[in-house]
Image (tube, rainbow, N blue to C red; front, side, top):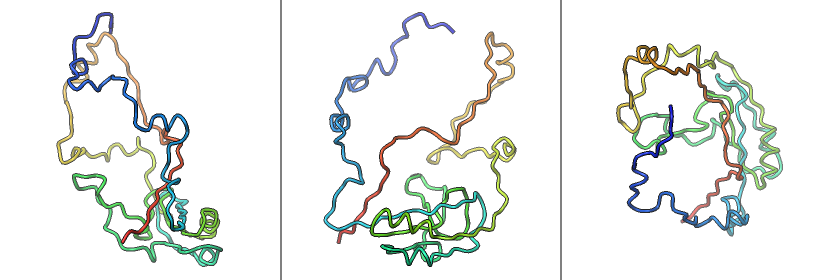
Length: 212
Protein backbone atom coordinates (compact mmCIF):
# COMPACT_ATOMS: atom_id res chain seq x y z
CA UNK A 1 0.00 0.00 0.00
CA UNK A 2 1.36 3.40 -0.99
CA UNK A 3 0.03 6.73 0.20
CA UNK A 4 2.00 9.31 -1.76
CA UNK A 5 -0.87 11.33 -3.20
CA UNK A 6 -3.24 13.77 -1.47
CA UNK A 7 -6.42 12.10 -0.27
CA UNK A 8 -9.64 13.24 -1.95
CA UNK A 9 -12.05 15.45 0.00
CA UNK A 10 -13.94 13.58 2.70
CA UNK A 11 -16.60 14.25 5.32
CA UNK A 12 -14.09 15.91 7.66
CA UNK A 13 -12.91 18.24 4.90
CA UNK A 14 -16.52 19.16 4.24
CA UNK A 15 -17.07 19.94 7.92
CA UNK A 16 -20.10 22.20 7.83
CA UNK A 17 -20.12 23.48 11.41
CA UNK A 18 -16.43 24.30 11.59
CA UNK A 19 -15.89 22.56 14.94
CA UNK A 20 -13.83 19.53 13.84
CA UNK A 21 -10.15 20.35 14.00
CA UNK A 22 -10.72 23.85 15.32
CA UNK A 23 -8.48 25.00 18.23
CA UNK A 24 -11.34 25.31 20.71
CA UNK A 25 -10.63 25.84 24.41
CA UNK A 26 -12.28 23.38 26.78
CA UNK A 27 -14.43 24.98 29.45
CA UNK A 28 -12.51 23.19 32.21
CA UNK A 29 -9.19 23.13 30.36
CA UNK A 30 -7.43 25.84 32.36
CA UNK A 31 -8.67 24.40 35.66
CA UNK A 32 -7.33 20.95 34.77
CA UNK A 33 -3.86 22.07 33.69
CA UNK A 34 -3.63 24.22 36.83
CA UNK A 35 -4.66 21.33 39.08
CA UNK A 36 -7.74 23.21 40.24
CA UNK A 37 -10.48 21.12 38.60
CA UNK A 38 -12.80 19.71 41.30
CA UNK A 39 -13.58 15.99 41.41
CA UNK A 40 -16.63 14.31 42.90
CA UNK A 41 -14.81 13.49 46.14
CA UNK A 42 -13.99 17.16 46.67
CA UNK A 43 -17.61 18.36 46.64
CA UNK A 44 -18.41 19.65 50.12
CA UNK A 45 -21.88 19.35 51.62
CA UNK A 46 -23.09 20.67 54.95
CA UNK A 47 -23.89 17.21 56.32
CA UNK A 48 -21.05 14.93 57.37
CA UNK A 49 -20.74 12.13 54.79
CA UNK A 50 -20.47 8.42 55.44
CA UNK A 51 -17.94 6.28 53.60
CA UNK A 52 -18.34 2.90 51.97
CA UNK A 53 -15.85 0.13 51.24
CA UNK A 54 -16.53 -2.90 49.05
CA UNK A 55 -15.54 -6.45 50.00
CA UNK A 56 -14.80 -8.36 46.81
CA UNK A 57 -15.02 -12.08 46.11
CA UNK A 58 -11.79 -14.06 46.11
CA UNK A 59 -13.11 -16.73 43.72
CA UNK A 60 -14.30 -16.46 40.13
CA UNK A 61 -17.37 -18.70 40.27
CA UNK A 62 -19.34 -20.36 43.04
CA UNK A 63 -21.58 -19.54 45.97
CA UNK A 64 -21.15 -17.86 49.32
CA UNK A 65 -21.38 -20.73 51.79
CA UNK A 66 -20.96 -18.60 54.90
CA UNK A 67 -20.42 -14.94 55.66
CA UNK A 68 -19.65 -13.58 59.14
CA UNK A 69 -20.01 -9.84 59.62
CA UNK A 70 -20.17 -9.75 63.43
CA UNK A 71 -16.64 -8.44 63.96
CA UNK A 72 -17.07 -5.82 61.26
CA UNK A 73 -20.36 -4.63 62.74
CA UNK A 74 -18.68 -4.12 66.13
CA UNK A 75 -15.75 -2.19 64.67
CA UNK A 76 -15.38 1.52 65.54
CA UNK A 77 -17.42 3.92 63.44
CA UNK A 78 -19.30 1.26 61.47
CA UNK A 79 -22.84 2.26 60.52
CA UNK A 80 -23.88 -0.67 58.33
CA UNK A 81 -22.57 -3.91 56.87
CA UNK A 82 -24.62 -4.90 53.84
CA UNK A 83 -24.58 -8.37 52.26
CA UNK A 84 -27.00 -10.42 50.18
CA UNK A 85 -28.81 -11.19 53.44
CA UNK A 86 -29.95 -7.63 54.12
CA UNK A 87 -29.55 -5.75 50.83
CA UNK A 88 -32.71 -4.32 49.22
CA UNK A 89 -34.18 -6.59 46.56
CA UNK A 90 -33.31 -5.56 43.02
CA UNK A 91 -34.40 -6.53 39.53
CA UNK A 92 -32.40 -9.46 38.12
CA UNK A 93 -29.56 -8.91 35.69
CA UNK A 94 -30.76 -8.35 32.14
CA UNK A 95 -29.00 -7.76 28.82
CA UNK A 96 -32.22 -6.72 27.11
CA UNK A 97 -33.37 -3.17 26.52
CA UNK A 98 -32.40 -0.37 24.20
CA UNK A 99 -30.62 1.68 26.88
CA UNK A 100 -27.68 -0.34 28.19
CA UNK A 101 -27.12 2.15 31.01
CA UNK A 102 -30.67 1.67 32.31
CA UNK A 103 -30.57 -2.14 32.37
CA UNK A 104 -30.73 -3.78 35.81
CA UNK A 105 -27.29 -4.46 37.28
CA UNK A 106 -28.01 -5.88 40.74
CA UNK A 107 -25.38 -6.21 43.45
CA UNK A 108 -25.58 -8.29 46.63
CA UNK A 109 -28.79 -9.81 45.28
CA UNK A 110 -27.98 -13.43 46.13
CA UNK A 111 -25.20 -15.75 47.24
CA UNK A 112 -24.03 -16.58 43.73
CA UNK A 113 -20.58 -15.40 42.59
CA UNK A 114 -20.24 -14.82 38.85
CA UNK A 115 -16.75 -13.33 38.57
CA UNK A 116 -13.58 -12.64 40.52
CA UNK A 117 -13.81 -9.39 42.44
CA UNK A 118 -17.62 -9.30 42.51
CA UNK A 119 -18.92 -7.34 45.53
CA UNK A 120 -19.99 -9.69 48.34
CA UNK A 121 -20.31 -7.10 51.13
CA UNK A 122 -20.43 -3.34 51.56
CA UNK A 123 -19.23 -1.67 54.75
CA UNK A 124 -20.38 1.85 55.65
CA UNK A 125 -18.60 3.82 58.36
CA UNK A 126 -18.01 7.36 59.60
CA UNK A 127 -14.58 7.58 57.95
CA UNK A 128 -12.96 5.89 54.98
CA UNK A 129 -10.26 4.38 57.19
CA UNK A 130 -12.86 2.85 59.52
CA UNK A 131 -14.79 1.40 56.59
CA UNK A 132 -11.64 -0.11 55.09
CA UNK A 133 -10.50 -1.58 58.40
CA UNK A 134 -13.92 -3.11 59.10
CA UNK A 135 -14.11 -4.57 55.59
CA UNK A 136 -11.02 -6.62 56.39
CA UNK A 137 -12.92 -8.21 59.29
CA UNK A 138 -15.66 -9.67 57.09
CA UNK A 139 -15.13 -13.43 56.88
CA UNK A 140 -16.43 -15.17 53.75
CA UNK A 141 -16.35 -18.89 52.93
CA UNK A 142 -17.15 -20.10 49.42
CA UNK A 143 -18.31 -23.24 47.68
CA UNK A 144 -16.33 -22.93 44.48
CA UNK A 145 -17.77 -24.13 41.18
CA UNK A 146 -16.14 -25.00 37.88
CA UNK A 147 -15.78 -22.00 35.62
CA UNK A 148 -14.70 -21.22 32.07
CA UNK A 149 -11.66 -18.97 31.89
CA UNK A 150 -9.99 -19.60 28.51
CA UNK A 151 -11.58 -17.91 25.50
CA UNK A 152 -9.87 -20.13 22.93
CA UNK A 153 -11.20 -23.29 24.55
CA UNK A 154 -14.78 -22.01 24.36
CA UNK A 155 -14.96 -20.50 20.88
CA UNK A 156 -17.17 -23.38 19.74
CA UNK A 157 -19.83 -22.15 22.18
CA UNK A 158 -19.84 -18.63 20.76
CA UNK A 159 -23.20 -17.21 19.70
CA UNK A 160 -23.88 -14.70 16.96
CA UNK A 161 -24.69 -11.30 18.52
CA UNK A 162 -28.10 -9.77 18.07
CA UNK A 163 -26.65 -6.37 17.31
CA UNK A 164 -26.61 -3.16 19.27
CA UNK A 165 -29.70 -1.26 20.33
CA UNK A 166 -32.04 -3.80 18.72
CA UNK A 167 -30.38 -3.69 15.29
CA UNK A 168 -28.87 -6.52 13.30
CA UNK A 169 -25.10 -6.82 13.69
CA UNK A 170 -22.94 -5.12 11.07
CA UNK A 171 -21.44 -8.05 9.16
CA UNK A 172 -19.98 -8.67 5.73
CA UNK A 173 -19.54 -12.25 4.49
CA UNK A 174 -17.46 -13.06 1.42
CA UNK A 175 -14.90 -15.52 0.06
CA UNK A 176 -12.10 -14.62 2.43
CA UNK A 177 -9.91 -17.62 1.59
CA UNK A 178 -9.93 -16.80 -2.12
CA UNK A 179 -9.18 -13.12 -1.56
CA UNK A 180 -6.45 -13.91 0.95
CA UNK A 181 -4.77 -16.40 -1.39
CA UNK A 182 -4.80 -13.87 -4.24
CA UNK A 183 -3.43 -11.00 -2.18
CA UNK A 184 0.06 -9.76 -3.02
CA UNK A 185 0.76 -8.90 0.60
CA UNK A 186 -0.51 -11.07 3.43
CA UNK A 187 -0.56 -10.40 7.17
CA UNK A 188 -1.51 -13.48 9.18
CA UNK A 189 -1.68 -12.68 12.88
CA UNK A 190 -3.79 -13.33 15.94
CA UNK A 191 -4.87 -10.33 17.99
CA UNK A 192 -6.10 -10.56 21.56
CA UNK A 193 -7.48 -8.03 24.00
CA UNK A 194 -5.61 -7.87 27.33
CA UNK A 195 -7.46 -8.21 30.62
CA UNK A 196 -6.13 -4.91 31.93
CA UNK A 197 -6.43 -1.68 30.00
CA UNK A 198 -5.19 1.83 30.61
CA UNK A 199 -7.49 4.19 32.47
CA UNK A 200 -7.53 7.64 33.96
CA UNK A 201 -5.74 8.20 37.26
CA UNK A 202 -8.29 10.46 38.89
CA UNK A 203 -9.59 9.47 42.35
CA UNK A 204 -12.75 7.49 41.71
CA UNK A 205 -15.68 8.45 43.91
CA UNK A 206 -19.45 8.80 43.88
CA UNK A 207 -21.10 11.25 46.24
CA UNK A 208 -24.82 11.24 47.01
CA UNK A 209 -27.12 12.91 49.52
CA UNK A 210 -30.84 12.95 50.27
CA UNK A 211 -33.00 15.85 49.16
CA UNK A 212 -36.61 16.08 50.34
